[in-house]
Length: 154
Figure 1 (tube, rainbow, N blue to C red):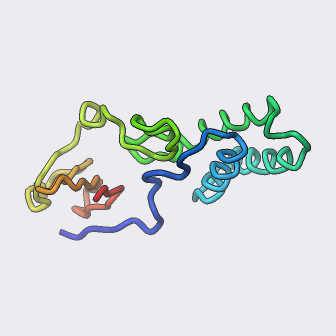
Figure 2 (tube, rainbow, N blue to C red):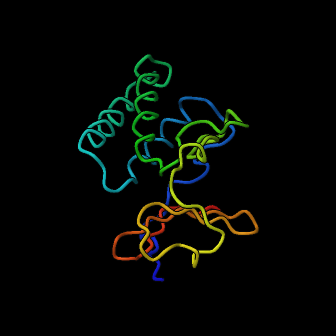
């Protein structure tokens, strides 16, 4: 069975830790959004607008900074992989990033296997492989029989 690995790094894990200050979060979230590919036109417009506003005096204490931070949260959520969310870690409110949803198993309606060889040849859809060490990988199997890795947690 042929497996295609993703070309770009995944949005998994922490991007900012140990702070909730807007002056720390805004540049980090902005950089993370700027690194997404492909990016929507509205996201590019938001990035340029925030960069322009960040040059203003007292920006980080302003209402604009709070609104911009909320908008960045919303935008980054769209780039979260399937069954993930963007936000604060459930166990640490100062650790922001892309985290596996606690209810992912309830939302998952694909095939769960402990060995990829157990995936039927005629199956198409999502497959989660969980090995005996608890490592997980999500694949999408197409009608051509090829597995494409979506994300992996080791």
